Image (tube, rainbow, N blue to C red; front, side, top):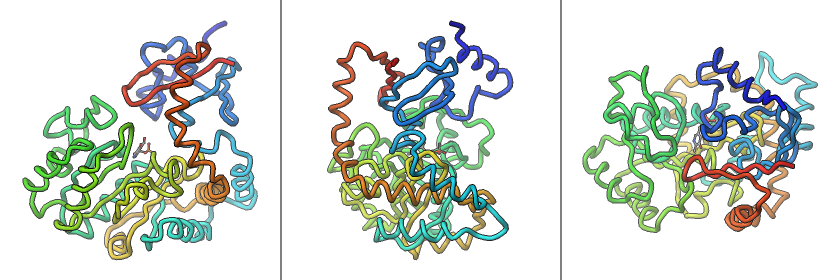
Length: 357
Ligand SMILES: Cc1ncc(COP(=O)(O)O)c(C=O)c1O
């Protein structure tokens, strides 16, 4: 059969720089001619490629967006309802308020909420608010937080600074050179490295920004260090839960490790595939959003917020979510044993796994 998926990719490379909009959905080098690349439909845990071949998506699920499975009927119904009555207008949608209230209920230390539609922009909003509140420019961070200037600027002093933060070889061409040393990267679980940065840039750091966990859990020492710095240095803690949120706990993974963040960011799974991200935080910090211009037309659309309200309702019902995620490691081992499964690893922290049906 003609590999239409691959042919389509070659056409896309000619007209779309990089072939697509997301690094994680570029075909892996080693399997480019076999990898499905494009989907024609998706449902539950299944994906159909352009040839109509069916695959079981055993791990990625939209790179973390579809925690309840693809094409979830209940979430779709909620979205269809607002599509039928209009998803955007000159006026505001009440769903913003409803979702803000819901997120504050789930994370009861937080008082205020802003919304965006992508993880990168939500992270950038959080950084802006932190800088406005603290009147300090520097951000110390570990992990991946999107494509914006504040993040990529960490590579201006050394182009390998971000290599250990999920994606290696991130290029920062086009990021103003003046942003050099405004974002300082430290390695996850490296308490001593973090302390060194705090000492070196004493009284200049606005916030420490991190994912609580990606492939490895945080060490007790690392968690203690974060808490200690937060308390003694009055540095804000921003937890990026774009990927980790709503997986092991109803809310963020910060709950599991007893961290008390000042700002938390949710994305990906919040709308089960419909674009919606949230920045939640304490009032004394969040109100500084009003001191800086943060605004966008499509942040007012109500598809994302309606999808999120329904997703949260379903998640709340499905208490077994916790168990699902505890058994994730067990599942991975079982899948590795299954000879039917085409499996390969393209980065050390992630396994892409598709079984042909
Ligand atoms: C922890 C984390 N933060 C931010 C982002 C960026 O989100 P987006 O791709 O929606 O801009 C990602 C995406 O993978 C992520 O995993």
